[in-house]
Length: 117
Image 1 (cartoon, rainbow, N blue to C red):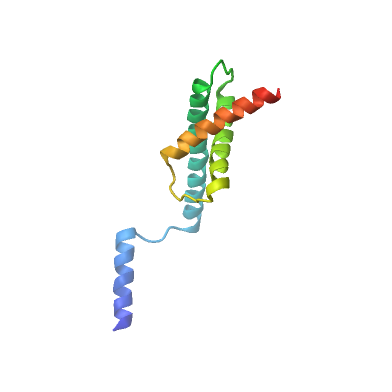
Image 2: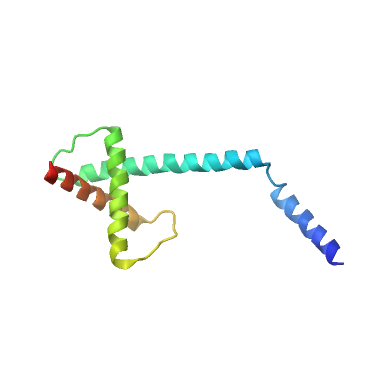
């Protein structure tokens, strides 16, 4: 009886989810997921960089690549500084407070670069 129950469960799982993908398909899916993360990082970095440039007093001349790098650096700073004090590890993929922290971190990066140069 347990063997029959096992075969019914396997049949139900493969019917709902479909058969398991071949290794090459799983690898391509993982590569697509990694590419999506890179594109998402570029988009969020650009948005954060543009917002930081908008809120920083005075002109901050830079192009698309500079805005993306500013946003990524600001996200790193904006995520690192609060974790120094709290140690909290969030598992959510996106939080509005993280976006605000990223913009503030990018503004801090602009300030530090201008102060050091």
